[in-house]
Image (cartoon, rainbow, N blue to C red; front, side, top):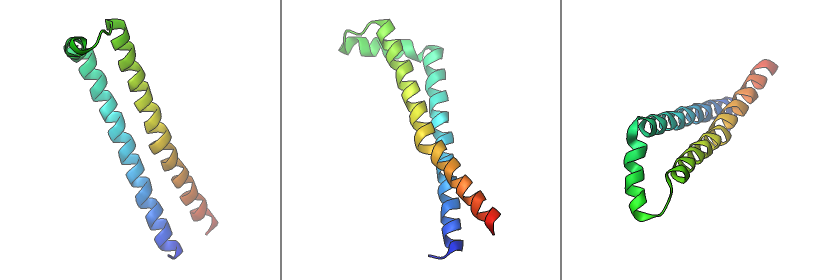
Amino acid sequence: MNKGEQDHLLDRLAGIFIRCFFLSFGLLLLWFFLYALGGGEWSYTIISHWSALSRHAYDLLNYCAMAFVKMCAILFFLFPYLSIRLVLRKKKKNR
């Protein structure tokens, strides 16, 4: 694999990572708005039939899950995107 192919591959990977990052944040926004607009109450009534979670514990579980998804999106999609872009910028600068 020559340098041009490497750069092209890294550029394609960076594009995939940034799209995955935006899709995961779109999912988070959808999750939050559905939860805030009354979907949380509807889903709590369903979950409360299966387990003995209090409303506070259910809310805490949702917010912690949202934070976990956000941290995973940043760690697994944004950081690799930024590192690939920095490598490509450094390679371009050295030419």
